[in-house]
Image 1 (tube, rainbow, N blue to C red):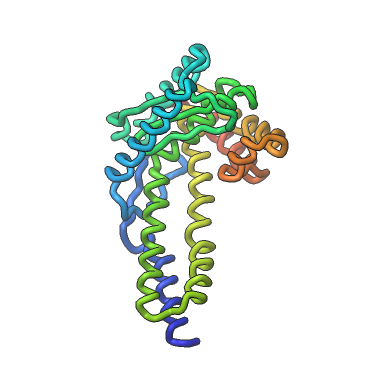
Image 2: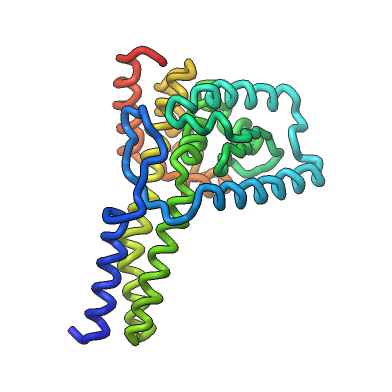
Length: 269
């Protein structure tokens, strides 16, 4: 192995090991399933400020297109369910009681919903109409998205990217050539970025199901929701896009089924 390749190997190894060594914290507590330490190199304030700005732009665009909260009954339903979840969110993260939560429904053919850092929620109308969601299933979706915000997964992703890019900048200082750097990039993605993405989805499933259960909803809806998504995904472009970042498979459904059973054996908080 050449000196340059050895240098890159050391840098990649450090990139993979650093989350264990430094910059770690856990953003939630009191969860039965989710208390993993997280790599946080970017400040929470920075991410929340960026999210608030981005959310304002999305809302302004929706208003300009007359696509914001146009169906009063639909909007009331979404906000009522979201507010029940928001009321229980401090069980898992006390400081989120001080977040400036917002909930809006946007008319769109895209089957999607999301919650930005700081509690900025958007639900796209097609999610409701295409899947014909029950209240429990909608609570599952919202719980999942809120869980991403409670766990600050965007902040963690940006911290991981910061670490990875810093590692490759160091490698370039050792004179590692572009071809070798590209190979190292692939190795880092497989060893660092992709597992983070999968772990985030699992955490959001589990914490979100806990949250919706504590808010009074049926945790069995997690299974029925993802079953619906799998059944409709192949024939719906919008839903297929959602499934590409929220993969539904048999192992995910089995995990949700097991967690639902565990939750039902315990009292709600």
